[in-house]
Length: 623
Image (cartoon, rainbow, N blue to C red; front, side, top):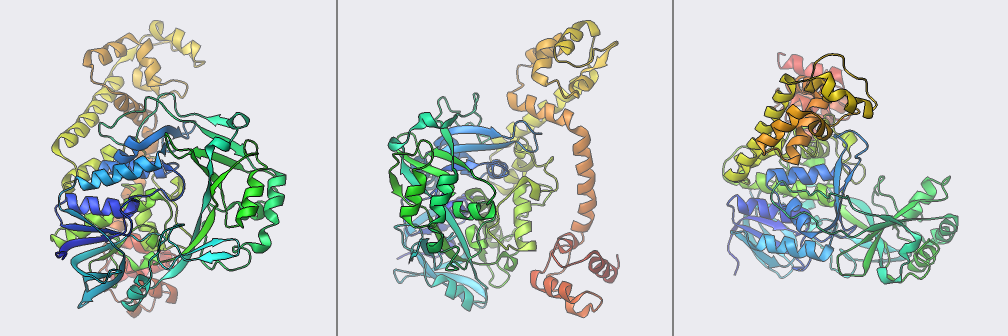
């Protein structure tokens, strides 16, 4: 009934949607199998995209030609740029989305892609021939052939939902999970383990008193994620902030004796950076209050997500505690929070392409690898989709370096260090975050997307124009001076010292009190240059100002990148026999043999491999 496909993608969450879209747009015949055709890229937890470091990932996905940024821009109800008070390396875009629109827009985008077919079913097994993927078996009893397989099953593998002392099997509340697939992969030699995550309750927004909460509006001039011509918000919907209190905590404590978390019923590893409310009360016992973010789930729906109140306590305890928060006195609940425990596959079993070491042409992406978050899942799906296609077509793998993208940092962390808790991206994980800013993701990565075939000629030319315009403007600033008479009044107003002689505009802009927009308004020559050109967009101005103000920091990071590149350029054979190097520590031999690092640089980042171990390998290689 179904033909053989180049690539099958199992699961239509954020990872699966990006994987299927990328592989099909590159020319592979793709079948996307999902158990529910109404939940494409479902926002199972909070209704938002982006945030600290996550926003950078969404912009990187977009710059490479992925669809998450475009779909978000067409679905958002609020936009905020976080960390504006800090340096640009920390600026992180975040959007509240309409959950229903988000899913609809993803489906519509996927249905427009040639070579992409859909099948509603559940993959329950993987078939192989001589160690290579040959197809899948499904719940409906079908065997569908393929040349490559990308598994993006999220939290659905042998999942158990916990609410107090109640446990039941479900992928999400009300949805069937996946059984048999873990066992099939185990039989092929892959190791699995258990993880735990959770979600907050949803409530009826009509029952809340927002006048008792702090309103959190979107940015006055909202931005967007995609570098393409997506719409900018003309109106926005507010979020709100309230707080827990001592009475809330006391009520929650009454349910601890029935908590699956504290009774040891949950065996999976939970997220340290997104703990449940009961976990926060125990871990931060000295605090009498915690922030709670009240987030609408769409333009029209009354459903509201309670961010910060994730819980697996009995539903009656959750309800009684919630009513003691300001604005929630008359709250009505749509559904309680819950914890979910599921199988994952430790990512040390993967290559940087996200192909498994054990089975050829089998790729894993998303929460199945031990990550958490829509953005982390989506970027893995994109990379897996690209690499599955490239391998089938005989092209070199596509691997991003740590110095090129947050995506590169994430995947390198997974396959080199593994996970001991659900992996979430933070800016602190990136050594070169001044280089990996959200504003320059297009300049960094669009050339890659163009070479891959996911970015068209017109968009590539537009990026080159932006790059050139920024260079022209910086050149003008370096070579144009300002007279004391035309600028000193402005400098005085800005509480920065006057000048006594001509000074380059570049040097003036270096002062922390000044910005490029004000300089344009106060220096005639600069204003004239901008007006005559009539082509300097706000993006070009922002990019130019950042490059000027952070030039010395950027140069220092580039020096560090160049030092690291020396080790990254020394490749290691995948079949290198580390056991024969007796000068290596026992731990190093074990870790190196298991992970099979691609380069000396990657080997140096493996936990348990010391600098002296690296020296031994370099000496053996004649370096």
